[in-house]
Length: 252
Image 1: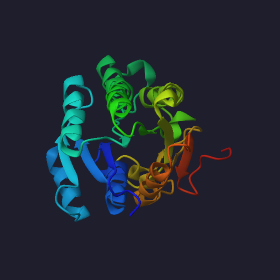
Image 2: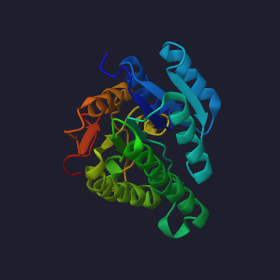
Image 3: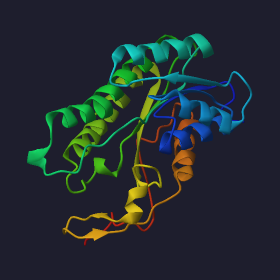
């Protein structure tokens, strides 16, 4: 298996895209630290993977708490000895209310999770990847199609995902000297708890409500695995994986 001997951290690993990516990595031989707020879903992912004991590590983690993040990376290094991949996947949205009615607390929660938490995880990954032997590793950020175009009433989520794109570029540039590659995967309409609501109908830019096609999150997991499996001399800087028939490309 291509990932044998390699170690990954996946944030938001208990459900949705994070779960799909973790299962894909584990299926390819990687050892994976599963991070998420609730330990029960993490344990369920480890059980579903059915891999040999010692290849998974479930760590309850709050990415809005820098001490919790530091503990995640310390436990991963203590358990597996190194870190080859970080998938910065954890993220949340805010209530879909008019922009002027959005509570400051809701704005801050999204920024703290989607941007500041991602940055803090990236810092911890850099510290390990720069110091280990062999040196280097890869960071993949979950950007979302919202990093390109917003949906109505999604200012906090869209703003943070645009910011993630800037952080991806900065990380890719700053990581060069240390053999650290960084790329971003922009996902559209995966059939998860967050994306699956598209099937029931969501607001469009013209004010209408329409159902949208979705895709199996396993497709996203396989895309993350492809990015992760490249040699460090090569990097997918940006990849878009979307439901083929979703109304993203085009007008109307």
